[in-house]
Image (cartoon, rainbow, N blue to C red; front, side):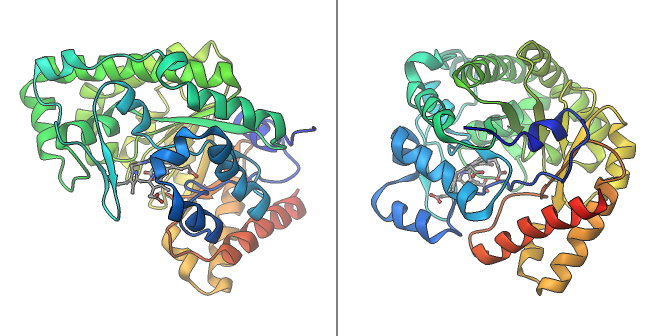
Length: 344
Ligand code: 1CP
């Protein structure tokens, strides 16, 4: 089958005939079909059954007409393969009963061999590449965000224990970051080898750090990861929420595409990351509950700024919320395509 390359072209900052669009969390609870599957299977079960997982991954591609598919999985899946048990609690998120807090806890974590302990993920990717007509994005959580769940034991508001470990016991923090970096590198290389055509690293909560702390405790790890993945040749995307003040350092990591949340206007983001990177974003996901003319006005303004340079991918500033109507995302996708192709 012929695959539409709009998304990959935009990642490489090549000229495109219309702006590609996909949505973070484009497979999920806002879809009646997904909710129906979830009546029978847990999130982790869906991830473990390649037929089901590829069906869920493809759902938004046909339903919304987006230009990329993102593997359906969760950032916690490889954490389980590192030997740390977790559960996804309804309405809460990932919960870990035995958090990582000491040198011995870090020592116990294994860097998994994805071909062995994550083979279901790789098989799903193989299956998806057989019949997808758009590029497939693989992903992983980035070390800081993964560490936040591992150290706190679940979602957190202030990341007290995470920051305590980081600033108060830096050698243990560094060994945790190193171990997570090795996991991310082997896992992403395995996903790419299986067929993933781009990679996004979700560092959702790294924006909780002051810029100096990001620079000291996270940036070297991110540079190491992106440097190791460069040789694969696939576009590498780095995304974090509330990361406005970190964007210039995001650009130093070696990522090719920077995901921007809604708090930073696209023109300012371009200024901060420079001309060499593509940008992805950044409609406030809560604005999908606004009346259509308001959504359209905001999408237009994002596109007007995005289209000023090559290398723009339309997305939300964070994931789709479960209460969003399918019809709104369908209309938005069509609008982005139509408006940006007229501009061209
Ligand atoms: O079964 C369910 O519907 C529960 C909700 C849910 C879903 C749909 C969870 C639990 N994970 C997922 C799938 C998921 N997770 C995807 C799907 C692929 C797609 O985009 O279509 C992705 C990319 C993730 C990645 C993920 N998980 C992130 C990074 C992206 C982001 O939204 O910031 C994070 C932080 C998680 C942790 C997590 N897993 C689940 C929840 C509810 C959370 C967030 C908890 C918290 O607020 O800390």
